[in-house]
Image (tube, rainbow, N blue to C red; front, side):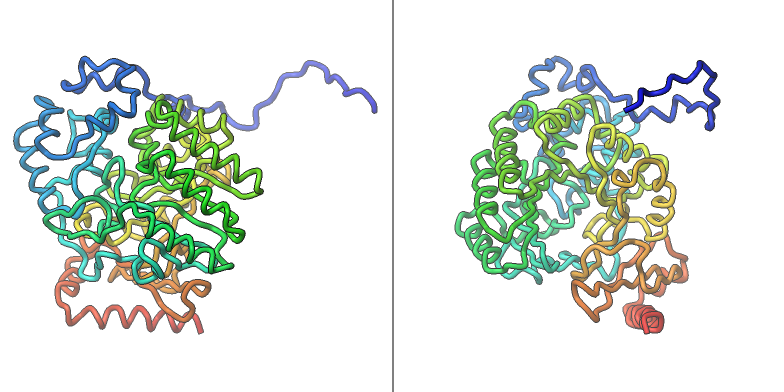
Length: 460
């Protein structure tokens, strides 16, 4: 082979202008004892704060504890507003010290992390009249308790009903957490008998190749349970892919660094799967760049070193990530940590969080700006999880979208052929005249029927 030619020294003529350093801000991650800004954590050492047991023990579970933690940082009226919010919320309060430390308590009403986890009574809006507590009809597609079989080759296994924190916008508020004043939960507690029935069903269906282990949150499973579930599913010949789903890295990354038994158990399942030529990955849930710190980076690098793939699923939320700038920064910051952006969901119709929902148009607008900002494999697909059990549909793929009434119509030929699935934009983003129509139950059928009729015309 001939040697490479050495080119003469010539100036490099740039084809693009020099990058603005501010566009690289997604690489700047918060480090240092940031938690000490919270009065209750002023004396907490780094060793304590990184201990997952300390995080779990000091997790905030009621407004009184919240007041004690933030003390003089907020006004009494803020606490009263939060108490009212929780009385009307379908989810109970559970916030980790890590998460609490990342909230900007000088401006809590506008902070994107506070918005996700602490409801304010003054901000709540009436639910959309077409809302259903189990809007995705997961229970209707469950052949055995806690196992949803909707897609041909995939099933969702809800192993338990608790999480390290409780998100206001949880689509499983019908089952996750303890009962609230608004919702009596369906029981999906850990049960060997229930798990065995789920595994037997998966074994009996040769088309099932892909299993999502969720809940609740797989972070809450003990190390031995991670291996118990992993080993049981890997032993089923037809299972080829598994995903452990968890919000944990976004709200308590310390667990991956200091709960060695849990992280080692996950690693063993991943390695066992690889030897069996089966894929085992971790799916997580970052919604805002501020959720990602230097601690997150350390946790994600530990998983990277162990060969564990991490993918992310975000929820598009009003006041949290509903701008091209914020979503792009989130996507690029995750990419910097080797977390692959997978999905961004248009917010499901969830009870008690109408203030968080955005429109299909908003998702389309943001997706156009995010696409092209980074590599395609790190660019999320924006989807509507079609109410009624249609599954995830590309947000652009509607058969018809009436922007006046806020009704978009989707089909899912490979999931439930011949059916139409409707998503409804939030009422407060519609005109006053249309809001009046939605206030009249007699108008509902007319608006939905008209939208379906238009969709049918376009699919002939």
